Length: 399
Length: 233
Image (cartoon, rainbow over the protein chains, first blue to last red):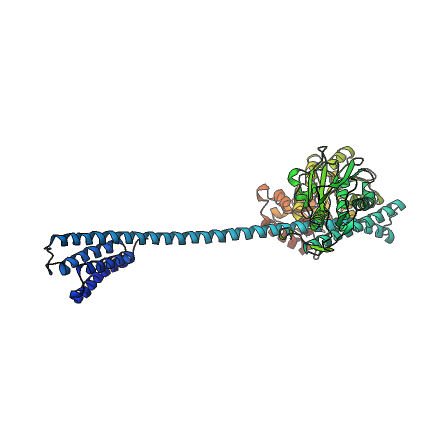
């Protein structure tokens, strides 16, 4: 940074005044100081001017100090002539030392100032960048949060309104008949159909609300696992029995490894996971196709279970996203089918349950190359594991 | 039109199509259902229904695309089933040629009323002659040649643009007309974003019409969508 004019002139003035004042003090001391002491004192003064005011005032101080040294302290005193040849050497040595030391000091000072300035600039840039990143991350977080809230709202309103529409349309038709204005005669089958729709859609609403409650529990860390020693066959049997009405038109193949060890899990919760996978497999595959359920050991400490269907499958880029809350491949992804769309909660809940047990869940292609295979692992468990364990989704999963 | 009007219901929710099929059949309509826009369009081509009821959000070919495809080949009345929050899509469907909409969840009576009105309009339009210069609709008598409008026998003096706007309303009585549709029809395609023109002219038209028959709301505002002309008795 260039020196201000006032500052520059102050440097020159102080260079001259300090050398003059020091010369006066040294002269007053008279016989107590020799030429060497004088030259060192003046040199010290030049160094001070160099470090404080820079190279040009230091140069001025060096020349002025040399003149004072010659005039007052080298014989013959009071003149600028030098009698002895060794005094010439002393004078030049002084001048060269003063100028060199002055310039070096000034240069060092300048470098130090530049380094300090660079450090300040880097600090400032770092702060600016950090603030910019913080603003950008905050904006991105807000945007993501808004997007998630919007997705939640869309999913909830759609999944609540759709069955409500069927219920309301059924009820108003039945009411019209009862009121008889205008006269309307529904046959028995039509009346039963309307009642069935109301019944089924009420169940659908109930399932949706239960799903919301489960998700909320997982997110709030209130999912209580009641771990007991259980048998994999029984867990699968319970899920199959529950899923029988929806898998009736599919061929179920069961492949459970013999002599599987017992697992220390919440049997009801794991059965819910298997049911969810069976429900999805039935929903997204054609009647008559096969659904294969398998369970085997995966190493010494894990049990691996899977449900595979022969449906259209899920594109690799959607295989992680289907575990996100309210994500539905048939509506939100690129899967274009005429098949029904789920609520977007089943796999998110299944993931919550599996991870709560310390396991993992993922999707892979089937060995036949078509369809979807959902695989999950569960630790076999140990005696010292607590009976209950709370689980919550990671912060990034939360809305 | 057939003795039993044919209605095609297009919705990917099987429960809703079951209810609508039963509800409409019980009212004397012949009903067929399709699960998406593609099969809906195929059924339309095979069966030639008198009216189409379609959902908007569907897999494969959605309700908007179905409206577009149907309008390219037919003037069949289309009623769209929309949900609160789908206003933008609803307006898009109306701009693409849908005649009316019903917001979910709805009672069967509301849907039936819309169905009857749409079928009535379709019959009226099919009966009207291309060179027709006099329109009678409810309280209104409009003579295109002399550019005279009477409401319940009293003449109403309108500016040329007000007259054009009213004629468009009378010709499409009962239909939901979006802002864009009205602006394009009366002011031309360059003015479809100029909602303020429409508001001013609608305001003036209402004042003049209500001066003749007070308390009668002939131009009904459809919030966020447009207007519906109700010609009265």
